[in-house]
Length: 238
Ligand code: C5P
Image (tube, rainbow, N blue to C red; front, top):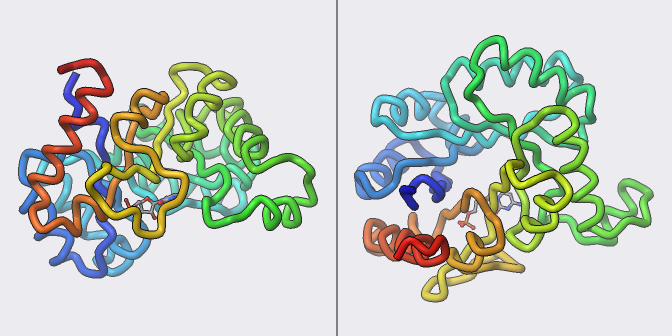
């Protein structure tokens, strides 16, 4: 197994030029990139063509959330762009997610739809009040993950601390895509409840979403190499 395939670099940049400079500086070291709203909108979507030309895999992180038909049509756009992964909000409901799967599979069998469960910016109190629910944050996240699984989605974005429990409920093959990963040598920034890359893979995270520890490092390539090494250790490859 190639440990680089498990690391998704978050291209959180305000311009196409800055994002391209980062991709160039990482070269062959990084193979998988996440494009979020900021970069997608500022580059008017053009960053996707660039990454495809470079032979990179893409996680299109636009978090679609609307009525079933509108969400499905936005997802069809992602499927047509040959992205490996894109995401929708599980709180859009099972019917919405089923429609996404039905429509995107007609276009591209390989594009994985991933669900956002509960945004990590919510506190337990906020989410309980919003949904008028007595469930804990973790129980709600697992509930949304189960809903996504039932609808036919491939996995969820979740905290590394939830990955093992989600796999217990949704099965080993249900993919866990985890931000909140920090090597010991890097700043935590605004991330809370973090794990190191090694711990994260040991806890069942299939993909690690990592941004600033690499993109803001003075030597991104070296930072990436160190993270790949940690992932290899966690997987028992070295
Ligand atoms: O720079 P950093 O490693 O913190 O980047 C993490 C990436 O994952 C960012 O693009 C952030 O928006 C995203 N993310 C997150 N927490 C979530 C969902 C997405 O940090 N719950």
